[in-house]
Amino acid sequence: MQYSDNTVLKNLKSRYDSLTNVEKTIAYFFINNREEQKLSSKIVSDKLFVSEASLSRFAKKCGYKGFREFIFEYEKNISRYNREEISNLVINTYQDLLDSCHMMINKEQMKKVAHLLTGSERVCVFGMGSSGIAGEEVHLRFMRLGLNIEAVHDSHRIKMLASLADENTVIIAISLSGKTKEILQGLGIAKANGAKIVMITSNNSFHLSSFCDEVILIPTINSLEAGDCISPQFPVLVMVDVLYTYFINIESYYQKKMNTLNVLFEADKENVLL
Image (tube, rainbow, N blue to C red):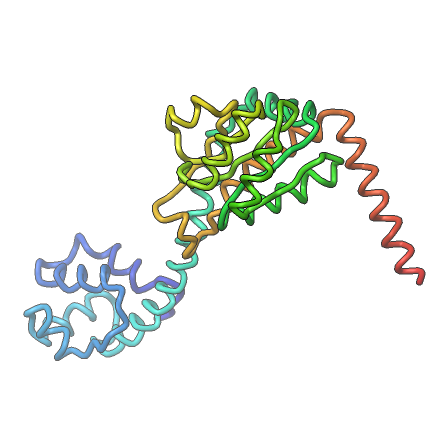
């Protein structure tokens, strides 16, 4: 008998309805088991309260020579399955977040924020922790287009820049929770000075919309802020990329982008010649 990836589990699932009640009990255990453990006929029979003879008949009914051959293939399969499941979990979560970002994009809002940035004399990006890392990316992206922009992730500097803000300043605040104390304090100071406020957050609360000029909503998942498996910056950077695309479509900034790329290209050529 030839085996391929996931053959054992697919085999059990396809045969499940044709099995006896005892055999279904055995199949159910192996289909839902995710632990790599000792699975001798004695251990499994004691665990499931079935006879070892029932395990042998079950294995043969599923197309194997006996329970030992079944277990040999099953253990290879479950080890591979667990590795693939972990990878798939990460990829699928990123895909779900990306799909959610797509659904949450407000085109008119993006145009409005892009023009808000072009009409400003100064842009400050506030973010703490992982949001601060995302803020640095925002700074680098828009700086290349000639925007007067600065990113800060220190609570004291946030307050200082907020106190220097005026009606010609745009503040981009990044906070997944929308509750970061240092960010909210800085926004309160900047707003009192007449600055325009753009918040990127997953918190869709009236409190934020009451003092922010624009709230760009991003999707989230449980414990995203912890950043254990999924980068908490991911949905932020997706929305920033969308905003960036709207921004460079404003003619004057598209030309600045091309000028920047040309300068970098010429510098690379000179380095090669040297």
